[in-house]
Length: 238
Image 1 (cartoon, helix red, strand yellow):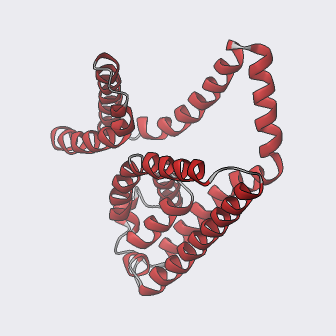
Image 2 (tube, helix red, strand yellow; image 1 turned 30 degrees about the horizontal axis):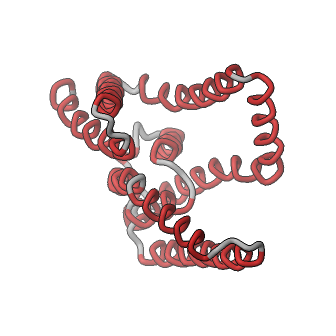
């Protein structure tokens, strides 16, 4: 059994479907409890309907970027596992980085060449990705409330310095993810530069045209145009 046999197996699709049904059921149960509690504390039904409608509307557009990420991730990890990861927990940048590191640790240059290799490689990749992402979830169980309240208090006391500290923390995370791609070669660097350029242009257009709705599509558009540019850069420099 090869890497792709495992990635595209009926067993994996079945297990993923069970996991997704469990998550959907849990989300539905929590939504039902929240609806009942809103009635208990006197919130009017019309207000609840407006909140639900707004939540659904604002969730549709950002999901476009997730769908695009799913298509790119599925080419190397199969539809089932990619579907599960991006539906429940994870992000394209983390998933690809973790999977690539797992493949490299087993002596392969990248994920693109393991398709016909033994199936245990796919199992190892899934294990590494799952264990890695669980660290943040476990930490959140014990520290999320403390971190959130501490950051909120710090922002209130320090004003602009609180916001600056929070943004610097986010930028640090982005730099960590970018570094792996920057050292991967000229194609990766040019693709990153393209994505940066597209994001800046879209932000400029949204501001000048007074079209804040464009910001909702910026991630999806940046992903599409950057992936298209990577084909061009690969043809020119590989």
